[in-house]
Length: 365
Ligand code: F6P
Image 1 (spheres, rainbow, N blue to C red):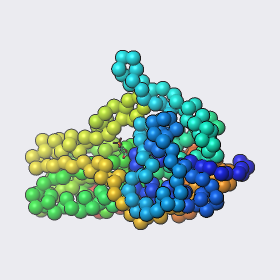
Image 2: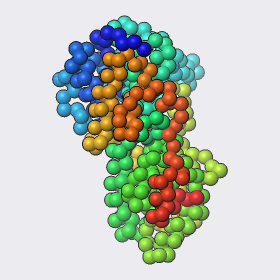
Image 3: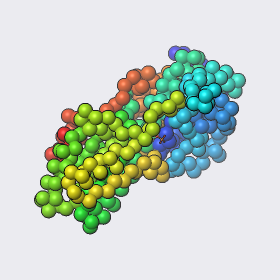
């Protein structure tokens, strides 16, 4: 694509928030204003273009002192897909309508030359579809789940792993004092990246991830073996998307028009099963949105800032439809489509899983 003069760009953040989003916003605003461009923030995903919120001018002052802050100064939503906008139907039930033409029209009305869309797979799919409708988009990958193909890592992930690991560390002393089994449910949707990395770093006894369906009897065997050895407590980390062999994932809410299914409840379900099978006192804990909150660790700020700067360079080059990604430690450009074509899953035969097994960790298989 040939380069075109840019005067005014927009940035939005979509989907679940992730520590490091504000670092991206800061880098985009500083790099763009340095080029003499104006920057606007579309609030709440695409809400600012749909009358559901506003668009705000972002200058150097607006992004002062935000790099270390969690969340996003622009707000976000994972219920704001303009192609599947949920509204109440005549019978009171939610139905999805397509409002994407309104987004395109509002984008033009505001005189915007490009959009930097920061999001996970859902938001990047929306970005791809808007691109097909003529909106020049550059993508920035974000998610604590780390499940985006084509990029080695997404910012926010390492902060989530850090939070989960610290929780696992703290649970050790109380689990040991009470001789209890603890189940800790972590996020990750269809993938087990957070469970795997926090589970290994937090020296869990059992790690359950969607990529390796578990057998409850194998999980109980591992727990019983620990007690038999004299280690009279056990810590199990379970990804929210983990499921038993030949079984289903545990959801708190099925998918609805305009938003995806919500995972949750696997730890409590397993705690009951483990207690029934072993008679051991068992407790469960859901770390939930703690994993998305708080200040990004240095690594996530660093990646977020680099992604933001690189996204502006892509806009300058007219490389629309591209997304920034980390490959071999370098920020590169890849087609957004390639990032949303498939999910990046844990390799059950990869070195991390093998190392965990060599440390005596059970994956319940
Ligand atoms: O994709 C990020 C994520 O935190 C998932 O790990 C989790 O399943 C989901 O978002 C939770 O979404 P919500 O904020 O709607 O509860």
